[in-house]
Image 1 (cartoon, rainbow, N blue to C red):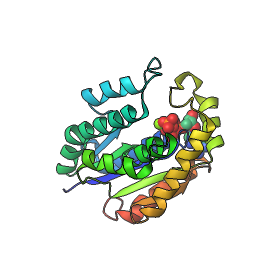
Image 2: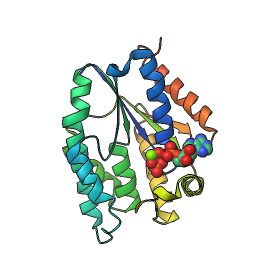
Image 3: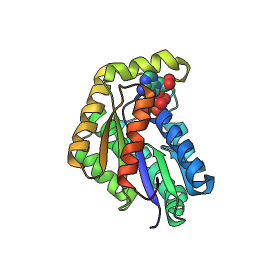
Image 4: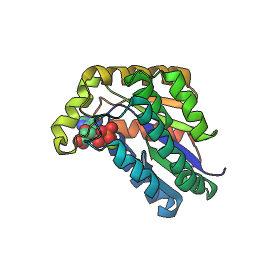
Length: 214
Ligand SMILES: Nc1ncnc2c1ncn2[C@@H]1O[C@H](COP(=O)(O)OP(=O)(O)OP(=O)(O)O)[C@@H](O)[C@H]1O
Ligand SMILES: [Mg+2]
């Protein structure tokens, strides 16, 4: 495929949405809006957004962890087929707020389903489509939660409310993934001021894809 696929990962409050928005803004000013797709998981299209609503419904407190993992994988599959692959075939840059590593870290690590099992489960969903580059925004779990509570307590969802222990397990799993996939995952220190996190991210993208910024 002709396009460029970049995913953004990190624990809650790491700054994924803030950073991806800045990168999107910068890229569209260079390449034009038709050349860049900004999207998020779970979501992107009607079916995936419907699955998202089920996942983040505060009333679904009895959701089984494996059900949750399967729903995330299902939303991902639909996202790939309806949004990501068509954009890549059209030669676009695809920026995705979360992708497969989120499942491995949250369901595999955070929910203790096993990172290898969740990786395998998602191989069926992604059918070979990994990002060329993954920006992993690394942050201390307490600082991440603090940021969310300070800035947008109105948007705290079911997953945000899980215990600190969960967030620590998520981060630990992300760090193992980063070790295992050194060629794909770039670790950025997300405890820095936002402007520095953005410029580090820009540098990493520049380094990987000389053709995007020149
Ligand atoms: N480097 C930073 N320094 C200080 N505050 C930050 C930084 N990055 C983001 N924030 C603030 O922290 C909050 C969370 O940021 P953001 O929503 O971008 O994180 P996220 O990784 O997308 O979180 P989530 O996983 O919950 O979607 C926001 O209010 C944002 O303004
Ligand atoms: Mg976000």
